[in-house]
Length: 118
Image (cartoon, rainbow, N blue to C red; front, side, top):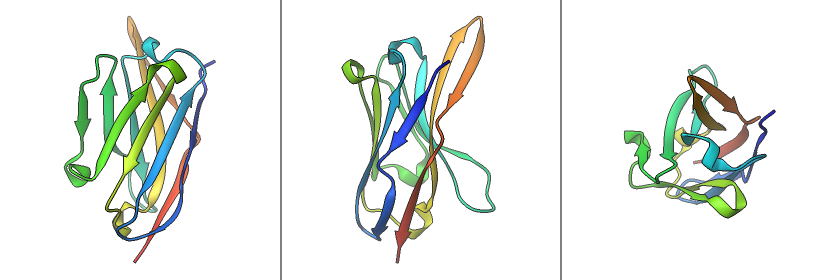
């Protein structure tokens, strides 16, 4: 059973920064992609960013230039550096991993709350 454990959420003022971490229970090389989603109250879960095994990244338009995803293969950990935070970034942030062995398998962390005050 794969476990993804997020950490690093919290309360920050607008314009501030936070770094989220997602530690996987097995080698992150076993996943085709890893990424971060978020869900604000009353809204659907949305993709923030993801990164492939090869290091290719993809960002939602609303975080481009502010957020950066990275991976530490030795620590089996993916990070999300969030700068210039806005109140509308307030949400629960979820780590996601996708593995493909014929069919796709999706794994989720438990989520970490990020609250940005104005």
